[in-house]
Length: 333
Image (cartoon, rainbow, N blue to C red):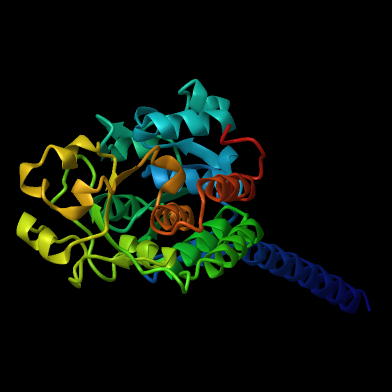
C-alpha cells in the first residue's frame, strides 16, 4: 500500500512539474510579438520591445506618433541636426530638447555598429537599403525590423508592424484609419484642369526628379494633380530640354531654395518659372513623405494646384492632423 501511495504522490508531483513547465512555455509563447517587415521577414521578439535604436529620422518620428518614445535608447544624429525636426520633437521629449538620447553614428551619417550594440537594444528600426548594418546586427543576434516606405500600402503595413513590436498596434491602426479617411477626401475637382507637377530633388538637384511609381508620384496623384515626369523610374536625371518638353504647371522643391531654380539660366524661359510657379516644401518636417504624413504632402500640393482648397483650409487640416497623429493639441503653434 505504501508503495502504491508513493507512486501516486510521485505521479502527482511529476504532473505538477509538467503542468508548470507547460504554463511557463505557454506564457513565453503568449508574450511573443511578431511582425513582417519590408523584406517579407517575420521578426519575432520574446516580448514587446523595451530598448529600441532607430537609424533614420523618419522612423523616430513615427515612434513618437505611436506614443512609444519611452522605448527609445538611440537615434540618428540627424534628429539634432535637422532644425525643424529637432524643434518639433523637442516639444514632445525633453531628452530630445537636451540632446540626451544617444546617437550611435559616425559624423551624423554612417552608423556605428559597436555603439549600437553597446546600447543593448532588443530591436533596431531601419530602412531596408541599410544592408550592411542589417546583416551585421542580425549576425550579432539583434532583431532588425526594416522599412521601405515604397507606397501607401507599405507605409501603412510597416507602421502597424512597428506598432505590434512596440506594443502599440491599436494606436498604429487608429492612425492608419485616420489617414486613409483623409486620403479619400482628396478627389480632383471636376471643374478644374489637372495640373502637371515637376518635383525636384533636395539640395538644389533641380535636374533630378521622381518618376512614375515612386513615393513622390503617389503623393502627387493623391493630391489630384499629375506627375509631369512620365518615366517609369525611381529617380531619373534629366536635361533642361526635357523639362521644357514636359512643360510642368508648377515646380516643387524639397530642402532647396527658390533661387536654385530661378538662378538657372537654362530654365529661365520655362512657363512655370516665368509665372513664378515654383514652391518649396518648407519647413519639410510636417510633410515627410516617408511617413504617413505623405497625406499632408499631398494636401500641400493640392493647395498649390487647386484654388478651391484654400490656405485657411490647409492650415485647419494640418492642425487637426497633427493632433490626431501625435495625440496632442497646439503642436503647430
